[in-house]
Image (tube, rainbow, N blue to C red):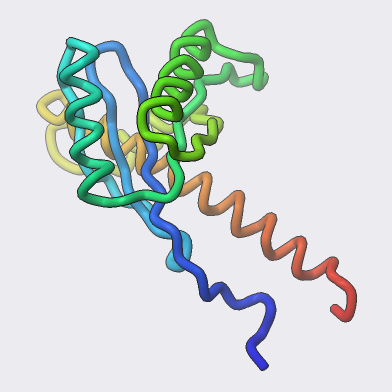
Length: 156
């Protein structure tokens, strides 16, 4: 009999670090719980942005999308949060996939600290890396919630 704590179902998750100039995109799957930077969408026109995102979704077939939600250090919502929420609703409406918002505090700082090379020349890569930080935090949070639920289930 398989252990109830062992994951056997895998789902691809795509995450976004939304910005006015660029949108960082990361990919990962739940079985491994590892995120990696995928791409940066640098289109300024909305229709071209969504065309590029649509191609990524078609290629990777995610089962769920995660959008970073900016918050202040004290966890209050950042002024830009409403735009990120709107972007999340647009993704959900266009692609008919479940979309979750994830706290993105410090994601850009963490991504920048993890990057090597000249960071000024790699702004586009930084956005994709920030999306990977957001997705990794999402994986880590969900993994800890799964483990907590397993530990508190009857018989354990």
